[in-house]
View 1 (cartoon, one colour):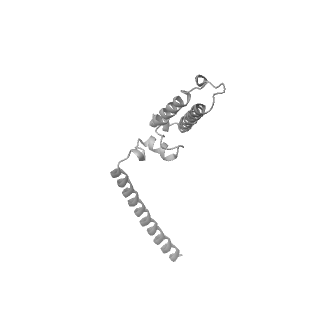
View 2: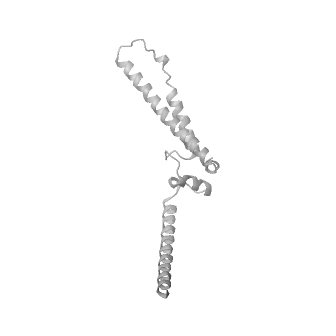
Length: 135
């Protein structure tokens, strides 16, 4: 699902955002229910019947939101960034799913690229100096 959604960034953002909101809505409602439930145990009931409280609303919202977030691969992040979309397009693993070896290997590759860029920048600087010296 992540790969398919990564080709449609606006839809990806909408689905991911909806998942985050539904998840936190579930937490909110469940906590409201628990607060109401435990406060009704300690106080004299004043016509509030527990049967009118939708005890299942919070947990269902949590499960639906969690399912959406897990299916889209963004449970660990609250907003969609370019890194997630690009990794989905490339078919790469999420950073969370990578092994320590893979992360170290990528880090080493990046260091090598940075070193090459510095070398090229140095050479360009020397070329500019020699061209300016000839003028």
